[in-house]
Length: 195
Image 1 (cartoon, one colour):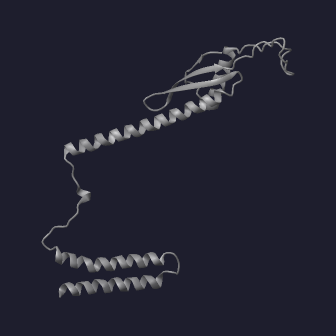
Image 2 (image 1 turned 135 degrees about the vertical axis):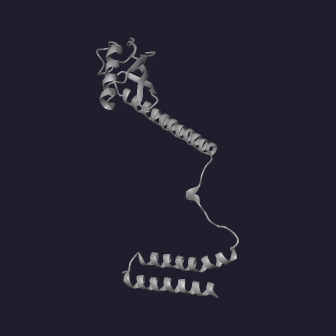
């Protein structure tokens, strides 16, 4: 009987508080949430005494905030966390490396006389750019026109275009990359192939 009396008292107190809050709150978006919360309190007020009676002999105490790990478990958790952190860092580094390599290759191809660029970026342990290696394939210069060939209107009087000056092209690529990305202290190695 004491159980039933305690339950009724708790439910009445919650209903009185809910009614008071209902009167105090203005119409709007908050009122349904307050009703929902009060409904949860009523359910708890009814279930708590019932569960205490049904499971009187059992200890249902949950102490997650006091959960203690053994030293072995703690070391294993820390090792797993460290491995996971390293995997995330490696994935991030690979993603950054791939993006920066693609961007630098695209920017370097904008330099006149450059046909194709392959870039390889080297990162240090902290993920900062340490070196850039560019392999540049220059544009091929057109062959001399033969007797039956048509001379283009804007060519240089039918003469062969001057070959691409590798030193000048290399300097232009370095300037574009340094000015665009601000890599002042990053060594940039540029190798020409073919052409």
